[in-house]
Length: 302
Image (cartoon, rainbow, N blue to C red; front, side, top):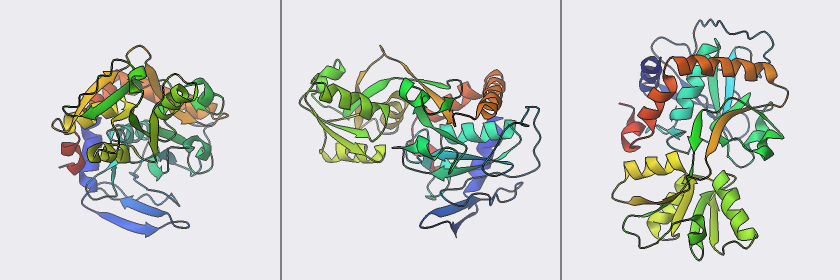
């Protein structure tokens, strides 16, 4: 399964075209040698694989925005979960592979809608069927969305410049520092709560994308980046001469899940069944081994 999916993404860089979408959005279409172009999405970034598909999973009660297509919301700019290949338009990453694999199990095509992470759940049922974008399952989000079974365990991590003299043995040691986070993430919520409750006094720079936080760290604008453990590991593995792990909070593990609408119980059941089959096939272990390493080698998809 994994090799077939990765071959699809490798072939994607051969033919990429830009089409106008609704408003100011752009739509990117991907063609593969054995697939037709998916033209189902009207906005965002489209990365679909088409063809005759069958599934042994009951989809009779599943309602989709576009028939035969799983439309996925994601903030594409959060490697190694979501990123663009060097062509600047083809989505790649762990969550991209996961979406493709689940759609295949459900007998569906798939398409991505690129959207900012802050408020991403609000677009479910309006712009996309579900969100696969490194979303932590927490009580607040469970009030507004259904979630699949967890597919990743995550820990909050602090990344600093290589050779930094910062001594960080807990999140409390971020006091007095300038900390970069991605807006709307668990990292943002956590550090903001520490500051707002007076637990620590630090300066928080919240960015729309985690890429900006690491750029600020490079430029000396901030002292540290607080982010998910796999993201931290990816940046450190990709740039071992630039970054190092200062601290990982192993005491409070988080879990990522696929978010769906509150009433989408049929889709939730189908997605969970697809995930069970993928687990039996070794998809999660193989995909994690591939993506949670150096990032530079992944962007080319050669």
